[in-house]
Figure 1 (cartoon, rainbow, N blue to C red):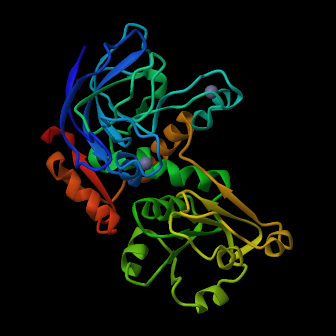
Figure 2: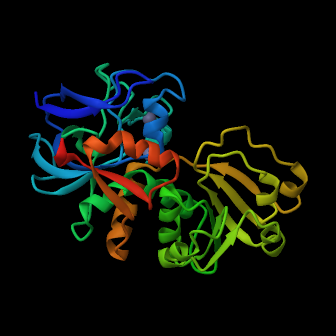
Length: 346
Ligand SMILES: [Zn+2]
Ligand SMILES: [Zn+2]
């Protein structure tokens, strides 16, 4: 069984520290991957600190994994050694429920096996990408286009697909007006992707501090939500608003920015219940919805789309030893726009 170095949380209160463990011996359908880079997602912090409950320790976080195939099982047909590959938020699902058969494995009705803090089908805890190696069934491994840099591609596996999936589902494209609330790790991917899809893109950010960045990333317009005038100017304007900010908000104000048939879609988990008035919804057939990552086929479609449009994340690459410091900086919003761990520094 391949032994691997890692960084793990031993409980909810202690900083992550060096750890080592054995990955499963690769089976017939498995792909063994050398992890080169792993992005730091806000979810990693929530789970390492047990902020959502149910965390199991030791925990090796990380679900934005980019690496290179080292070997494949005898029955693997989709991958070969040397290929650039990624692993996202889940590594298995039931494969037979209605959702799985539709390629919506992230919404598996039985059980999605998440990349860490989850149990695999043999009952073992799963460990994520803050480690040197991983073994994953070929059906849950993604191809990363060779023209994309591997470090900046890692965040596509969570942040990228988290935005791509709602943009596709709600039809972002030419002639459609899309707003992204929040210009952080998720939001900056939303701007790049919606722009590449041909939509007219607006950033709704708390202040105008990141206006220059927003325009560089592909936004056509940039408005501050701290300015009440924004909500008058943009009334009834958007076909789709994707909210990437977890903080509680006055949702009615954002519903008011939707055009007829517009949708306000949550991709972060709001801190508090989403309270809205019914009248603004029914009078314009508006929708409030949620969306979580994407299925395997759609994630591959997103990676291929990024390859064609030369899209990756804006990243700050750090050695593994700085992961605890990086967590603190993520909480302060002090990163443009995603930390990526160089797993070669383990
Ligand atoms: Zn994530
Ligand atoms: Zn299923």
